Amino acid sequence: MGTIRLFNHYIKRAFLVLAFWEAAILLSSIWLAAFIRFTGDHQLVQENLGLFWPKAVVYAAVVAMALIAAGLYRRRQRYGLLGIFNRLVVTMLVAGPVMAVIFYLVPELYLGRGILVLSIIISFLALLLSRSFFLYLMGLQGLQRRLLILGAGKRATSVSTLRRRSDRLGIDIVGYVPLPDEAIQIPEERLVEVDSSLQEYVAGEGIDEIVVAADERRGRLPSDELLNCRMAGVEITDVLDFFEQTTGKLKIDVMYPSWLLFSVGFRRHFLRQVGKRIFDVTVSLVLLVFCSPLMLFAVVAIWSESGRPILYRQRRVGAKGKPFYIFKFRTMRQDAEADGKARWAASGDPRITRVGRWLRRTRIDELPQIFNILQGDMSFVGPRPERPEFVETLAEKLPYYGERHRVKPGLTGWAQICYPYGSTEKDAFEKLQYDLYYVKNYSLFLDLMILLQTVEVVVLGKGAR
Image (tube, rainbow, N blue to C red; front, top):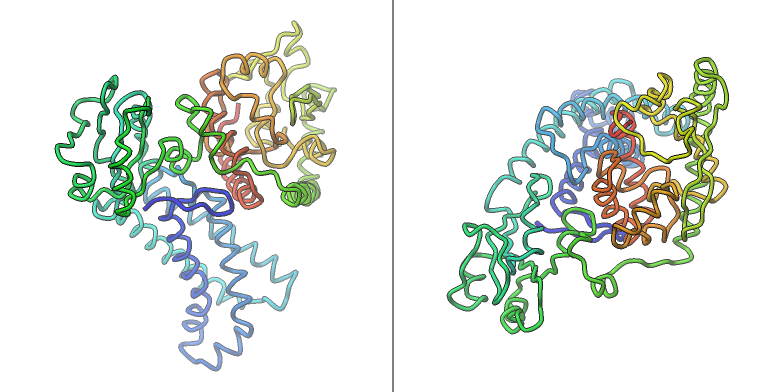
């Protein structure tokens, strides 16, 4: 199975099918729970359920969002059945209280306590069975999409680096076809020799897709044979499109400028920007209301341990390269950069206070940035803003680094949920590839997905320094 572009975001078809199947499970769980609760008496079921569809849809939506927040729809999930079991337990423990709050706010959606508990139990067991079956299916050779890589040089080597099971989910790389006069960098055992025509080889091996990964295309690509394959129904994909769709990042070390010129994305519609601003303000105000007690606690904790200042103001680079001052709760000693030299935070950094370490682990230190969002300097979702000193250095060493400033920086972002915290140039390079994917494909749908998946990052303390 390949990917599908939905609201500018590439989603693996396997996960889309899984999502529809699990939505059906959740929608039917309430009816089945009521049927069991009233031992098959249809009249009692109808009397107690009342408006079935609104209640079922709300229940399914709440559990689905909890599944996303628990990381069960992450494209790079690597946990097995035990990890899925644990996350399903957390999902149901969250969904129950949320449904109780909804019942209080909207009494018309009320479900009996017995029906709700049975629905959660049925959903848990059915989802666990569904995920087990999904893992089994994805491992079957016959259901994997068979890929042939055209090329055996540098760009083809980048494909061979996809070693994670999550990146190779649903795909089977048959081999690499070397092109004339190409410097071969692929191990010999992974090369395939096409004795007949490319179309005959593709048909004989059951190839579903050809990924063009040629280092030099002029005079080397078998264009006529590729056209015959395309007309026969075989998908032809550029290696950069393949990486974008498969990994959710732009592979900038093998990128060429013409691909950026002609690829889909980088659209800036007025309504989209207005919608994003409304989304930012709404989410920020809601978060401000719910997190006010945490922010007050942080103020007291910082003041008790190390006094003032409570807030830390630091210059960062925003949209279009314009500088602004970001607000954070102070987590380091007052003399952390007494020499005036900017440094990345490192693991076990001695400059971080005891309270500061806890604030960083729980991400509470980031909450004052809500005011940056309300001021319009930041968005809720976007590339993380860096200090001017780091931007200047990285822009000289990393290609396309300045393009991440095409949109407002964010409190959370695609790179933050796809890659752990990094404090080296190599980490900055990896995160840049995810940032560019977001700049190219951002939408309210992607923002919502990132926001929900950020919950897992915050709760598990991933990447905290």
